[in-house]
Length: 99
Image 1: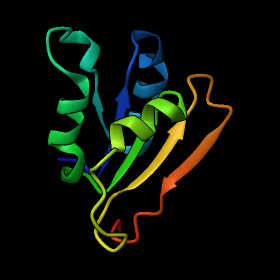
Image 2: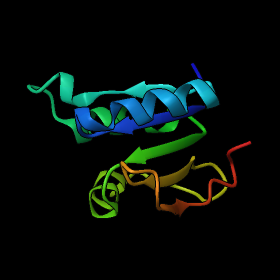
Image 3: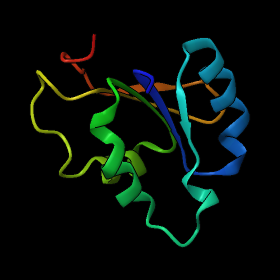
């Protein structure tokens, strides 16, 4: 599994996610393709499997996704929120454990 992961919340973010994935050798998650499942639960299940995350969503959604998941600044993955236009990047977790 790749060290970097990209989480999308809408199909419209997929072209950017795929472009980033090619450049960063990242795994792309598309939870909206499985509408019966809870996206937050899906995210929680894979959060600690990657060292870096790019969340293509609003920062408010990202904060709700991350609620209760971080354990230690020394071992948690780095998390950056990126808007779908790729204009703004907001670091949420520094990911000191991310190498």
